[in-house]
Each structure stands twice: as structure tokens, then as C-alpha cells.
Image 1 (cartoon, rainbow, N blue to C red):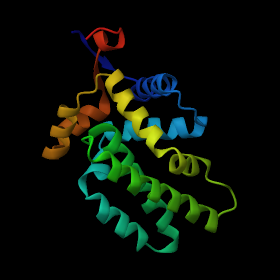
Image 2 (image 1 turned 180 degrees about the horizontal axis):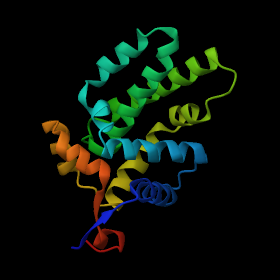
Image 3 (image 1 turned 30 degrees about the vertical axis):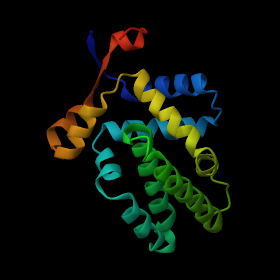
Length: 182
């Protein structure tokens, strides 16, 4: 198996998300596809630690207790954490819990955005409606890119700064996986 550095992490993940959506027959707005791609990029970098460190129920509780101006962003972060955990790391028996929390968080964020703004938050609405589909997209994108879950888990568990910086500056992927070989 050959390993190569991927300097354009966003481009790499965008290709994986689009391919996974095609394979799964998931249709989504381009804004939602961009959002999910950005979530994967965040998970590969130092921003991903915030999505993985705190228990999800604590994130949701804190979001619901937030002031009006911060509630939408806190609910969105809880939805992001649920989506990342369920699509990238969850055991099959955990996916249902993460899906319910994520769907609730995104729907709450969309309602909060509509309450304080004038534009419909299309990404939040779509993620709230199709959360389960996007969990499958993330899981498939991760498998398509041969992103080693054990390695990412180890970095998150160690909370080591150096590996996070290393992951954020470049992503190492298997060329064999992209060419359909294992």
C-alpha cells in the first residue's frame, strides 16, 4: 500500500463526500455538501478536538441553557459533534443515540436561526431532516478515503498537540484505496 501526502485536505474530503453521496443516492444542497466537507476538515485538524472532547449530552444541555444570541451556534456545535461521532467513530449500537441528538440539535438550531433571522437556514434544516443519510455519507467517505479511525481516535484520546498539528497540515491517504484496491 502506497502512502502519499494530501496537501489539499478540503479538496480530498470534498471528493470523498461527493462520491459517498453519489453511491448512497443522497441528494443534498451544495451548501450542505460544503458544510459536511468543512466538518471533516475540522475533524482532521485542531478544531476537531472540540467536537470530540465533551460528552454530547453536556454539549446539548449547555446549548439549551445558552443565551439567545449563542444558542443557535451551541446547538449547531452539538449537531456537528453528533454527526462527526456517529459517522466517523460510533459503534453500530451508538448510532441511534447520536442520530437522535444530532437531529434534535440541528432542528433546534434551525428554529433558533429562523426565530432571530429572516433567512431560512437551508443547511441546518437539511441536516435536521436528513441526519441519518449524512451519517452514512460520513461513514462511507471515511471508508473511501481509508481514513484510519484507530489513528484519529488515538490522537483524540491523547489530546496531543503535535499529532493534531500534523493532521491539520496534511492528511496521509492510501493511494491503493482510492484506486479501488486494499
